[in-house]
Length: 188
Image (cartoon, rainbow, N blue to C red; front, top):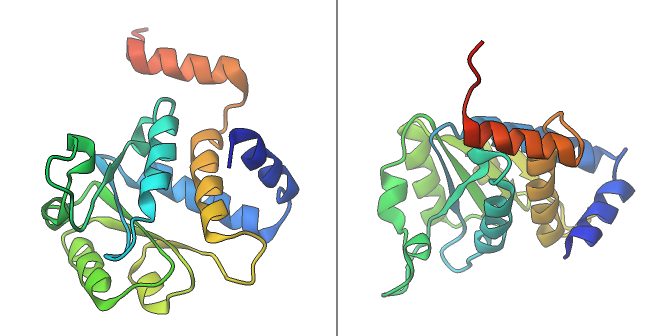
């Protein structure tokens, strides 16, 4: 989906329960990762790579959205940003958030998520209705198969909403936020 399609979908769903839930989840996502935002999918799928790319774009304006993609089996010789393995997840701690992007959660994924929760990480899930996964989450957004958006569309909505729904509107506000981040706090 391109930005225009995402904007159209957001406008189409603007007053729906789906968009209200997406906004709630996006607020939780923005505020949960003070130190690092880890993304993880199921062992047999690399679902979050696409979401990680979009969150990385949004992180230019909302630094807390800068993701670290955690992979079950990083390929040898992968660039550093694609070579983060499960050892990083094992080191999760307070101040970090783990965003799990998986329609269903096999037991191995549930174990890893439970371990990260026990070490203090905030758990957020974008799931397809997996009750056990949602039960481990501090915040969950469930995408129903019969709902108004697909699992992929939900990922686009989350990243766009997390980056734009900050209470500020327009190019000037985004530029001001960028300049504040670059220049640092102003002394009175």
